[in-house]
Length: 117
Image (cartoon, rainbow, N blue to C red):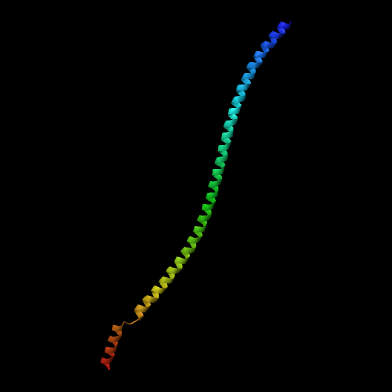
C-alpha cells in the first residue's frame, strides 16, 4: 500500500508540476498583457495631455481672433469717419475753387472796370 501511495504521490506530483508550469506560462502571459496595457495607458495619458494643450491653444486663438475682430470693427469705423471727413473737405475745397477768383481774373475785372469808367 505504501508503494501505491508513493506511486500516486509521484504521479500526482508530476501532474501538479505540469499544471504549475502551465499556470506559470499563463502568469507570464498575463504579465506581458499587463505591461502592454500599461504602455497603452501611458500613450493615452500622453494623448490626453496633447489634447489639453491643443484645446488651450484653440481657446487662446479664439480669444485673439475675437480681439482682432473688435479692433477691425473699430478701425473700420475710424476709416469710415475719415473718409466722410475727407469727402467734406473735398466739397469745401471744390466750393473754394468755384467761388474764388484767381489773381488773373481779378486783374481782368480791374481792367474792365477802368475801361468802363
